[in-house]
Image (tube, rainbow, N blue to C red; front, side, top):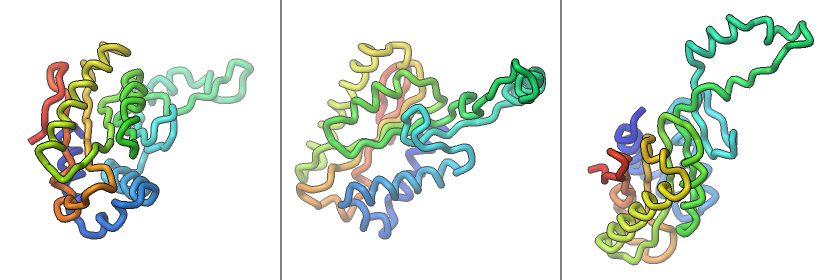
Length: 198
């Protein structure tokens, strides 16, 4: 699943009335959105908090299967040279971090910049003052800062596939309740720059 497909699916889910009821309660919302996203990406091979990542989708690769078969003497448990091989260590497909605090999403960005994964997703929130134009401008500024932060801590991570999703922080003016899905804005990494997903 690429960044655009992931974001489109999230936007579709956010249009449901049922989901809006959870939005103003951080704990309920986080639990609900995690569950929705894990169902969306497929619950098979999903782990919470592996590598301290909120949600990590992994894959058994053909290489993994052939590696274990080729080296079965090390994984049989019948020799003093036996090893335990945790399958989660093989191929990270999607790494997702959720951050409800408008001001600490950058910690999650730094964490994911150090990880290898086919797609890295941050679900974060931004201040909302009732003006959609101000909101979009603030998110654009945050996304620009994200590029600088990745450069500073792990520059090669700019070559990775990223998706930054921002929604409005709860509280403040709740005019976004009628258009919650429209208030979620996504940016994908494109040629080492974040680009708005239209």
